[in-house]
Amino acid sequence: MLGPESQNHFDDFKNLFVQRVPRYAVKSSGGTWRTRNHALHDAEILKHLDQQQAVACLGRWYPEYAALDMDDVSLKKVEIIRAGLLMDDSNSSLYSSESINSYHLFFRPEYNGKPPTVNLLQTVLKTYAKNNGIEIYPQKNRAFRLPFGRGQKPLDLQETYLKTWQDQLYWLEKKDDFDLSTVRMHQQLFDFKPVEFKPAAVDLAGSVDAAALLKYGLQGPSSRDAAQFEIIRHLWRQNVTLDDAVRILWSWISKKHNGYSRDFQKNPVAVRDHIRHQAVNYYNRMQLRDVLPDQPHKSFKGYVCRPDIVEIVKICEGNLPRIKFTFELVKYMNPRRYRDRVDIHRDKLVAWSSNRTYRRHLEHLEGKGLLNRGSGYFVGVKSKSVKLNWTYQSDRDAVLFEGRAVESLEKAVRMLFKPADFRELLGGYVSRQASHIATKRLFDASTNAYTYIHD
Image (cartoon, rainbow, N blue to C red):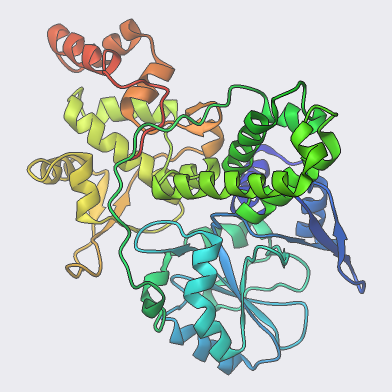
C-alpha cells in the first residue's frame, strides 16, 4: 500500500501517462507483448513501476507527454536528432530503452500555447520522423511502453543519479513545454488559419449515468440516439481518442442493445455510420470551442484549492480586482508547480486583468516577495518567465464540480463559501461596505456558476 506522498506521485503518473481503456499490453521479463482487452488496473501499473513487468498504453486524445522512439542508433545520432528539433535537457528527458542502442526521448508537447490532439502531434512530426527513421508516440492504434520501467534509465547528466520512479517523474515534470510550431517543414501542412470562434456555453453534465449505460446497455425503446450521445460525451471527458470512442460504442451497441433498437436489428451498418457521425461531430465541436477533456483541462488551464483562495484574499488584502488576477495566476501555476520558472505571455496577463492594471498587480506580488520575473524575453517569440513563491496544492484537492476543475473565481467561491462566510473573510482586510459589495458581485454574478464556458 502506498503512503500519502507516494500515492500523490502515483496519481500524477497515471494522470500524465496512463490510458486505461479500451485495451493495453503487458510483457514479462524475457517474454513477448500480450494484448489485454479490458481496462488497465492500478495493480498492473505498479508492477510496471516496480519493474516486475512492462506495461504499454494507447494514446489519449490530448496526450500530456510524447516520446521519440529511436531504435538501433548511436547515442551521437540521438543527440543530432534531438538538436535538430531544438530540444535539450531543459524541455526533454532522454532515457534508455530495454533493447540495446534504443532510446526514448520524452517531452511535453504544445502547439502555439495550446495542448495538441494526438492527430496534430503525429501530423506535425511525421516528416521529421520519416526523414530520421524514428517513431512518434503516443499513437492511436499502437500501445507504447510507460516510462520509468525495467531497462529505462535516465541518460541526461543531471538526471543519471535518479534511482526511483518518483524522482524521475519529478524531474520530468520540471521540464519546459516543447512547442510543436517550431518544428521545421510542418508549416506546409497548415495552409489556413481557423476562423475565430466565439462559442455559447457548453454543458458537460450528462442527464443519465453513462457508466451505467455502458455496463447494462439500452434500457428502453427509442433510446439509442440519446444513449450514444451520453456515452460519447463520457468517453470524450475521459480523454479517449475519437477512433477508440467509436470502437467502444460499436462494440457496446452490438452486445447490449437488449432488443430495444429496431434500427440496429434492421440495418447495423447504418447504426455504425451514425455512431461515427455522432462522435466526429462532438469531438470536432469541442475542439472548435477550445474545450478540453477533464484531465487536460485541469493540467493545462489549471485548478485551485480552498487554501489557495484564503491565502489569495490575504495577500491581496481584500482587493477584488487583484484577487481575481492572483486567482488566475495561481490557478495557472498549480499544475506547473514543479518547474523552476514558467513563461507567461503578456496577452494572458492582460486577459486576467487589463492592459492598464496587470503591471500593478505583478508589482504588488513582487513587493510581497511572492513573485519574481525574469528579464529575458523576445517580442512575439519568448515571454517573460515567472517564479511564484507559493505553497502549491495537489490536484487531488482541486475544487471540482462533477469531476471538472472550476474555471473562475466566482465559481470557486460559490463552491467553497456561503456569502456570509466569504464576507467575513474579506472583512478582515477591507471595510464592511467594501466586503459586502465584493461578495455581492461574486455571488450575484449573471453567469451560472456551474456552466462551463469557453475561456
